[in-house]
Structure formats: C-alpha cells, structure tokens
Length: 307
Image 1 (cartoon, helix red, strand yellow):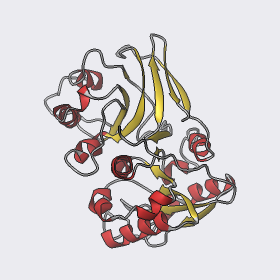
Image 2 (cartoon, helix red, strand yellow; image 1 turned 90 degrees about the horizontal axis):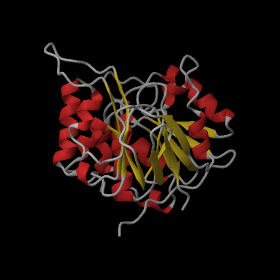
Image 3 (cartoon, helix red, strand yellow; image 1 turned 30 degrees about the vertical axis):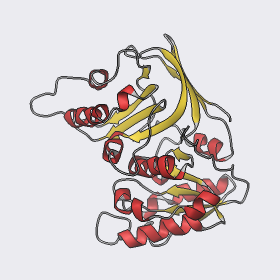
C-alpha cells in the first residue's frame, strides 16, 4: 500500500508565512494586497527580497541559484508555517531536483500555489508524501481582482474541511467515487511524465486546467496522459477552466468537452466547468488529501474526508 501524504498542521494566530518567487518574476506592486490580507487574517508575513519584486532583466524571479536558496530557506525555517508562491509562469522544473526536503518532512507546512507550482505539488505528493494547497497566488489578492475565492485559502490554513457544490454540466458522466485528489495545470502534468515527480494516479481523482493553449496542444497533452496509462487508472476527473484557449487557422474542430471525452473511458466519472484555473474563480484544493466526489444529474459535490 502506498503511504498517504501527511497533512500539515493548521496555522495559528501570528504564525509566519513566507512569500517566495520560485518561478516567474512578479512586480512588487502585485504582492502588496496579498501581504496585507494575510496580515489581516492574523499572520505575520516574510517576503523574500531576492525573488519577489526585484527585476533581474529576464523572465525569472531570480537566477536558479537564488530561487533554490529562497525556497530552500523557507522549507527549512522552523518558524515558517506556510509558504505562498508569489507567481507561477515557468521555472520550477529547472530547480525541483535540487531542493532538499529532509527538514520539511520532519516539520511539514502548507505550500500554496498553482500553474507552474503544479510540478511542486506533484513532487510533494510522489516523493515527499506531504499534502499541499492548489490555490491562488499573490496577484489574485489585488483589490482590482475578484477576491471572493480567497476565503477558501483562509479556511484551509485554519484547518477547515473543504466542501464544494457545483452545477451539473450536460457533458458530465455521473458517478460516486472516493480517492486522493491530485492534479493541476495540464501542461505540467504531461511534463511530469517520465520524471521523478510523476504521480502514482491509480485510484485518484484527477483535476486539470490550463491557460493560453491551442486546442491541439490540449489534445496532445491529454493523449500523452492517456498513452502513459493515466486515464485507465484514475477514479474520477474534474475538468477546470481552460482560459483564453486558441484555435489554429484551420479549426481543430472539437470543443474541450469533446477533446476530453476522446481520451477517457466511457464509464469514468467526469465533471466539467469546475472553478479551477487562471480565472478569478479558483477554488482551493488540498492535493494529496482524500475527497469524495459525487456527480449527479442535478449537481456535483466534492467533499474532503477527514482522516
């Protein structure tokens, strides 16, 4: 039997949260509201000065060495009780194999993020056996954004049990399954195949989302998952938002729903239009935690199971 990931402890008042930039650069102006919100929630916040808001002339939040050092220090610091990644983008795959999780495993803490941070979630699930939060990052806290989904992060950090209800979708496959939740950005899921971060998806509920991709690349990523055997192993599938999807000059000719249905077994429980992704509607999901998924004719429910 595989070892279930350990769920980090709930945060307490005045606990310290570290903000680091392990992937792409983010303007410091986009982090201010996040810091202030976390402080209003009762936490102290430590922002890494080398990887957050300091432009170094290229895409990344810092050199590979700087980003490794920033994340490693946050992982190892016993005073830090949670880590929020400032931004996704790209860069995690360049540093993931150089991180040391020995101290982190002894004193686990919630790691928060999505998009490029998907690879870190997968690595934590497969190699470290610690649960993590697929959730909005710094820019989502800006006053100009829809911040109505942020309380889900707050609830998770406080140890609350997550429970969601969604409208039914005409393309859903009904079903009732319980399994460990895993997933994230579809590109990163395909990217993880064949690496030490590739998750064991057998019996798990998989969730997927992506942004800015062409229909044919989404199709390619999903066929990669299918060819790797994922679609015959998972217990259920949640299809999130595929933001700003693009088509080619000659239309691909299939919708997201049709593309997904081409690669899954006809009896696999699947729910579409789940608020996960790069739009403001982005719920907080605990990767590596047991959930029950019920897909009915009138609604879809997803409820965390307390161990």
